[in-house]
Structures are given as structure tokens and as C-alpha cells.
Image 1 (cartoon, one colour):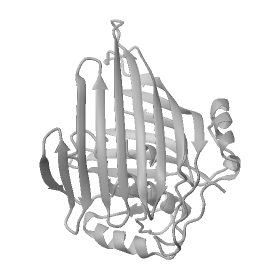
Image 2 (cartoon, rainbow, N blue to C red):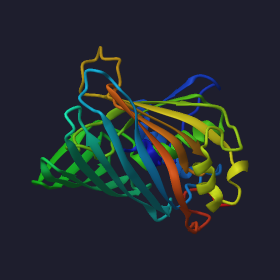
Image 3 (cartoon, rainbow, N blue to C red):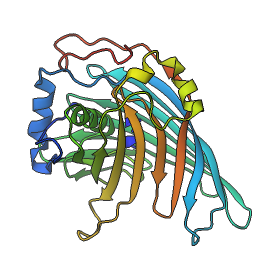
Length: 307
């Protein structure tokens, strides 16, 4: 779930194996250009639709949550030459300690292109008590930062620091993983909330393994849609998000998303850690869609992630 990375690109910089790979803000412009021109094969994100069952894993005693259940539906389509479209629905039912139930439905649709780096986003939140909120806008990577144009709820424009977008970030993680890197640090803009925040992200990547480690029987059944699922390299991935606008001394992330991700971008065995409570996300259904083929000159050669 870029996968899960963006609430989830061909951007690369590598250091010695085992050391952190840091994408410094000032270096992003050259990195974006260099990656697009790279001749080495780029990670192939296979188009797919995945459904995850959400449940409460842990909650602090101070939080008035008795139970949480829900569903995450994530769908990715596209290619590096045509851009990527991601749609997701994050639906939860929460029961508090007084027995009151509330329902929240977050629907997100994004379209992201690699060159030029543009990111269109539409976020709709339907809350039982607070009604509906909508944020619609576009972010563009420039030489100096990230230009954000908001269309709804009211027109606005502002510039944030340079950042990569969610699908770009997923491909960066896979490139680092394939090269044996264990840590990737990069600023990310995902259009969430009021679309006014760049997060500093730290991604910790485990070594490549096969045979679907950590998968439940239900997840293994869902992976029947992918013929070579047990043979594909899979990486334990944990992404911590830090608000750039927070105090510089802050070391506790706003939230952490962890999951196991295949080399084609399909994820399973997820956890969403919001500090005072944690949700599990288990894959229960998977549909793999045809992989579009890019011209050989577009974004470097890219193998078919379904094979």
C-alpha cells in the first residue's frame, strides 16, 4: 500500500549498505531528475485491489476505546509513464467505554505523475457526529519546494518544503530494499488532513525473505491471486511520520505504519500505530490487474511485477 505509506517513485540515492539513506531537502531536485534518467530497472508496482480487515490490537487505559473494527480497501492502477491512480476507503466502527458506537469513513482518491512530479488529491471524510469534510487540491514539485493549490473547501495556495509524493516514496523504499539498504529518510507530502503538512519520514527495511513470513491462513488464501506469491522477495517495512512543523526537539512520531511489502508493492500484515492505540490490518482479498507496459524510453526499463 504505497502502498500503505501515504495514508500508500523513482527517486534514488544510496549509501553504504546498512547505513541510513537520507534524501536531503536541498538535494531532492537533482535526485528526481537523476532517477527519471536512470538506466537501471525500476521497481514495478503491480496494479491491484486489496481488502484489509481492521481490528484493535492495543489501546492505552487512558483512551475511551473499547473496540474498533473496520475495512480498508486499497486500489492502485497505472504505470510510471502514465501516472498512478490510487483510491482507498478506510472505514472504522468504534465503540467507547460507555458503549456508544461511532462510524468514520475516509475516502481518498489521488493521481500522481513521475515527470513532472504532480499529485492530485481528493479526501472525503464522513463522520457520524461531525458530518462530511472534503479537501480537493493539487501539489507540484518545484525547484524550491512543493506548491499546493487547494480548490475545496475554499481556494488557497501556499508553498511547503520539497517532498516526495506517496507512490514515489514507495518506489524509493523498494529500490533501497533491493540494494540492501536498511533505513531510508525522506520528506513526504500525502495531501492528508488540511493538506498543509510535509512529514519527515524514517523507513526501516528488513532483509528480503520469501514464503510469505507472518502471513495468516486467510492472507495466504488471498495471495492465491498471485501465482508466484511465495517466491517473491518480501520486506518488513516500518514508516515513522514526523510533522516538520513540530518542535525541533520532538522525537516521537505522529504515527507509525508497519507492514510486509513484496517487491511489487503489494502489502500484508499491517499495523497502524497512533501512539495511544494500534490497529491491525490483515489482507482478506486480493485482485491482481494487468500490468501496463511503458515504452522502453519512459522512466527506464521496468519489469512486469506479476511474473
